[in-house]
Image (cartoon, rainbow, N blue to C red; front, side, top):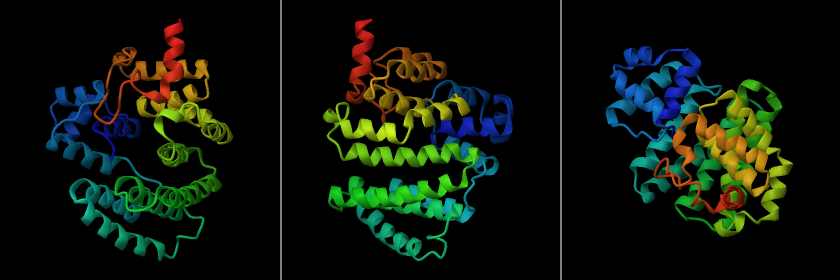
Length: 277
């Protein structure tokens, strides 16, 4: 689920509106809109989230069919509001419907998104619900995500860069969850895998496209640290600092979903290099 900050930045990117205009369009006080842009970790309240989300839906179009995007929105709502037992029951129903979709095996963008959704279902069964053996569930999730990635690569459209990055990031999450966290920074398999898919270049392109995307920069920083590429580490760290000066502080925690740079074992090599300096 996109944060207030992500949604606001995407609205601004598509419309070119100022904070004052976004304030007028949503009905939110200008100080609230300003806080959303100034504080990437700002949570806001239910009203601010509802109004920003509504404007985001009205202004930011998806390359995928609307009805499939609505399925993704439902999926996120189920995960947030249902018990794990209820969520699993809905996943089973949704999976059966998606697997029988007539476009699933096509090369259309709809098929990309359908395979992506099946990857999410298998990912959550395995790592969130813990309803499936890790190796089996991870392998199946990777099959769906890779099919999704293959389809989007066939379209060779620069406008799909962010979507391509997000699918790659889903694959990264599967790989990382299959490796003990304390071992990831030393994993030759993960290093080889990052190099084979040219991950650093992909994230670099994302940052050049969306300089506000500190989450992508953080992911790039992790990969660069594992690959022991200090120049790229500095590039991604500076991209984060350009979004918020708070990231200069290695102990800064941007949200409950992220640990500080100093506490992240995946960044051990990068932190060690900084300490040397």
